[in-house]
Image 1: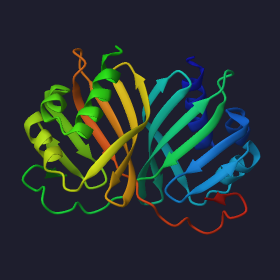
Image 2: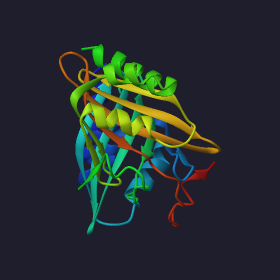
Image 3: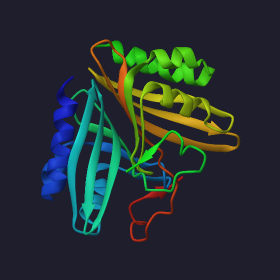
Length: 124
Length: 124
């Protein structure tokens, strides 16, 4: 099933274009969105589209990497919100029609490394 | 190339077993390890094995999901270190022999959600 890769590409390009009809068409009715870091969940296409439409800030998304394996796809995207840059890793699961049924999103944040490994690492 | 998926499965099982010879055999000589959150990099198999061997704490790893696409593999692992639980998302790139040449590791941390989306989300 190559369908889910294409669906996920459309998902990100529609989000970037704020084309919410196209964005909604990538999603199953009962899509489940999960943010493990905040333990938040959103259930259903309507609420999930609204969540994205209402998301504050002038955000822009660029897909850095996409890894597709049947009905599983992972993306690594670079996001810019004003002057802030971050990235997200997103796991997608699809149904037989190539629609997205589950999304798990991670937003890793910068932190200072613990001491004790300076002899092995270089910082950039 | 199904080889990299198998290599990555061996990588995690060898790490969990502290079998550093088996772990090293999954890696290319010039493997590049990248931690974008701390902007740290480790270059070369020897240093990277040492980094893992010296990593403090009684950590245990369980692979939750693996997504393989040719010479690209992504894993989502659950890690337990003493009483602390966390997860890592890791992007692997392989060479023609199915050895790992690049690893990018993300360790997302818990945070409190921003206000303004309570009408759409459920917390768990």
